[in-house]
Amino acid sequence: MKGLIKKILREQINNTVLVVFGGINYATPEWMESQMPTNMINNNTIIKSFDSNIDEVIDELNGLEYSRLQVVGFSAGGRNVFKLAKVKNPDFIGLIDPTVPISWSLEGFPSNSILFFNNNNWDSYPDIKERQKDLASNMKEKFGDESVKKTELNHKDIPKEFFETYM
Image (cartoon, rainbow, N blue to C red):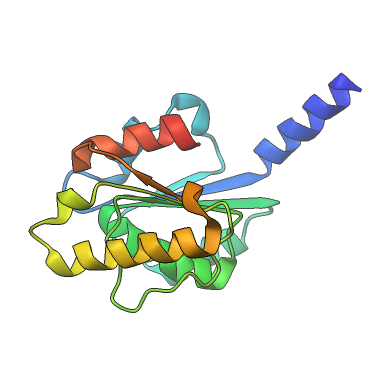
């Protein structure tokens, strides 16, 4: 029985696709990969830049067979998470100190979604700062307090902590 459970868990992990969107400047796909534990990276890990064409990402996902979809976005990459969620209804969403688009919604977000952020990192961008607060409030209301995790980390240090703690 124990062997069967391990086999099922292994198959679930092997059938999970993880899509990660990086941010502007230093937060390239290569940098995002360097923030992730090595055991998280496999053939089913897709790491994209913040300016990736979301339709191309959808086409890529449509060409894969998987049972679970996890989508994570850091900083400017957060905008793509909102776009992808509406179309693909992921099984897990992680927003890492994200840029929140003007016309955001929680459509397609599963109840285990996580927002991990430091709102103080966005003082120079008051509109994003305000939208992050609104997002946090809406996520708490819809998914519960555990869906929102605040940190005091600098923006650049947040992805590594997110991947190690919440994935």
